Image 1: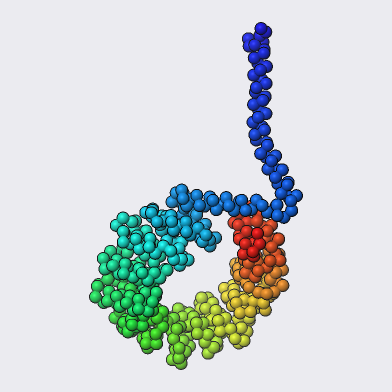
Image 2: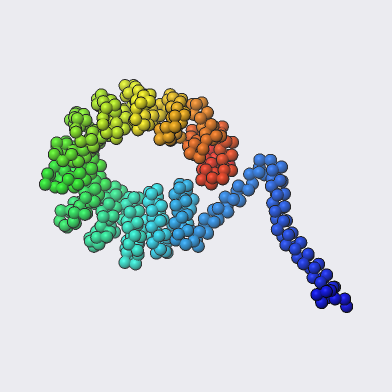
Length: 488
């Protein structure tokens, strides 16, 4: 037997080297073959035409949905909260049934609050039974869970929750009272008889239970939510009583406006003469749902008030009523008021009125490049809401002008308005294509809004290219835009 210089058998060394080489080859085969197979698959998909090329999209979607289902079944509270936020961003509801099942047996506060909040934001029914159980078993639930359940019941106007909410308020557990008052007012809207009963309960609570100052305002607001005319006399008495604290009088005026019963008008008109400027402005704001010559005159007179919030309220009331008699006042305020917010509200009111005289005023404000950015943006928004096809070309010209002069806030504001536009115009399609092909992240994002809002299916290929962007937010929005167009 021959030995090498290190004293090892040469045959054994050779055998070991062969085994080593075979092992390396096997490992490389395991790494390389899947890569080669994937490349071959890509090649065959590419050669198979559009149908084959689109095949990977469906498995990817299925994988995403499977991952989300697994998160709901097995995920931590943090992972589920992140998923719920994603579903909110996507405005997606296809996992609602799974979320309903998820919270049936859990007492995890973050999960319960997240799901209640997700459904409440959309006013989506389906969780009433679980929410009622959270209130009934509140000694076993986290306090935040109970609060989110109360809010949910109010947001969906769950009439079956009225007795449970009254029982909760009768227990006088202060940590839940504010939320319960608000929810009771909302569930009262489920029917007129329920509204009257809820209002009666709330008036009695305010009058006879000593709820404390921190709850009184919520009670007054809740009475307005019921919509019950039976409570108008009570609210009117609060509104005109100068001995009542201003925040409570303001809340009473807001509730009278929500109910909108003519029986409350005299109290609102009387409050316009209050010495407290906040009460005056709230009274003017409460005139919106009422009608008649007295109301019109009160709104016009409010434009002379030295307190800027009263002038804002006058503009808002003019907008709600589309009060043409207010046009001269609105013109003066939009051009000369010292408070930018008053100018903006005046322009919005002119836009709501929308007749020829009002539109000419808005057009001149938009065209004047020396006007403040906020004025020009408010004017542009009003023009596009009233006659987008007529004004889109001019808006694009001003958009390009703002970019050329590096007027970034103005440019971004115009861009947002263009992005929200709905206009049957070749100019809109042209600017949309330009943004899709050569714009930055913001321009491309707004361009996809324009595609979806105006059903610009002719730009589908440009949108499809964005699905390959490295920016996942843009790519995801591109996919959603194609879905809205009915294109896979």
